Image (cartoon, rainbow, N blue to C red; front, side, top):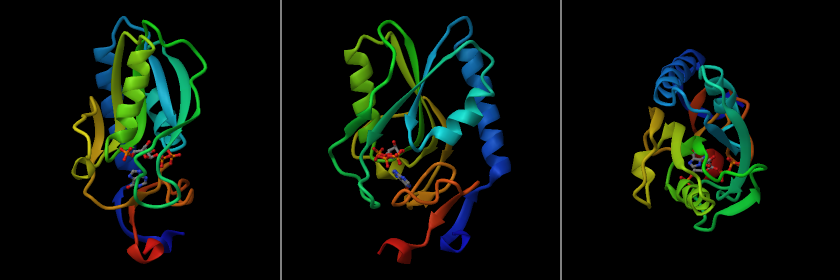
Length: 178
Ligand SMILES: O=P(O)(O)OC[C@H]1O[C@H](OP(=O)(O)OP(=O)(O)O)[C@H](O)[C@@H]1O
Ligand code: HPA
């Protein structure tokens, strides 16, 4: 599996430091509040596990599963809600945890959904931000790392549902998917 990686971008130590850095900022920014942390499956499960342990607040933790990349490296325009959040988001301060914001379509879908359901505030903490990939003008509030316009895997991020268990983030060799 490691042989399929062109270049390692972020190792375990760098990832840990990003979680600490963002956790501290979120703890300060949400002081006195009890945010509803909404983890977006499957990709954000490791980021969620690491980041929430660096947030020194009472939080509710919920999961939602959406799908846009149907086994390949290009997103479909159609986002599907696969598994819905289990609690009411009305009047809640929701902090979405994403592994990556690329085209921005998934994030737009989620923000619209939460706003429609009456969330008081919606912010986003993404592990990776691929700004060059954007098709929709949308920004995350907290970013672990900016990443260049390459297909990356590991630390929750997949290609064809594989590589999520790599402990680091790397660029996938092009011959794997071309
Ligand atoms: O900004 P976008 O272009 O919408 O891409 C970002 C989304 O794509 C990936 O999810 P995917 O649909 O592949 O599901 P997964 O989390 O189960 O891998 C990733 O986890 C984000 O949720
Ligand atoms: O670069 C990526 N890698 C894995 N999943 C993704 N979803 C959007 N962009 C990516």
